[in-house]
Image (tube, rainbow, N blue to C red):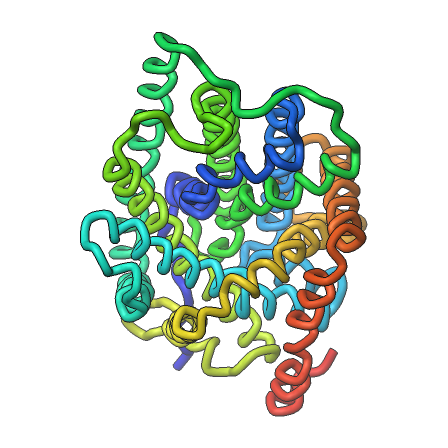
Length: 421
């Protein structure tokens, strides 16, 4: 009797929703102010967000081809493994587990309590509430794609509608009054532009989210590229619009005029919950793929017989995220490994060139702009990482230590499972 496997139940709208929910977080309201301190020029500020969006779109199309070739769970873990070997792939997956997904989930859950504190004073100090949010979403997604897609779709639809209304209303109200520019004009160095791209690309991270669930998408050669393109394009338009809003109506001190804090806090809670739900869905598919290949604890490869979900991988992510909440170490992890998100996505897109000489699946999607668009994505990604290492070597060294800290687990799991390569 064969063991249960993941089932293909998701369509292009589901894939797009996962991308949008992964990318769009409440950080978009705070990141522009930080980027403006690095790039104190309106045109340059919008420029880095447009360039970041173009890179994200180019990367999503490259991932679309990779996913069409290998419609398996795990995203870049699968592509890097096939192109650069098991060890390189493990490091991408390990980083996703220890910080990329789990750290972001921990930060998001704490963020929900901070904004809920506007309505229930004192709740921001309650770590068990943040843990309960993590566990609740894990249970929803562990119980199958049916409940998970309903919750994910509803959260994405509500928060996108609220954000669009927010942008439209503020633009309209701002047009009638005096606008105070948030940044002044001035020369900007190329090193500053590259450094600003780190938080920008980190804000766009998640554009590849649908690739992680490729094994559960119907007709992946068609629906995955469609979902990735729609989801990424939507987030780019929204982010550029929000930055234009920032330039029009946010004062240099960063306050949004007379908007009541309760309204913004409610919007922030919806945004973060949508992101948390999407990461709870996507992340475990990476650890599931690792375990299936003998590069992670074998239990993480188990699929629930009834719900057809990687329940152990989902539980493992929830447990580690909760530990990060209770220990308060997620902020450091995210700071140290922020550059790794850009690094590994660049390596994944680079694998497209490694695989290009091999037989392609008949009728598979071909990345638009190939080879120039993915090549530019790789060059810029590696330039951003190199500049981040030179500019801030301390956090980069700490980040590499976190990444390499997974090697003992890799060697142990490989030896106990008898895997080779």
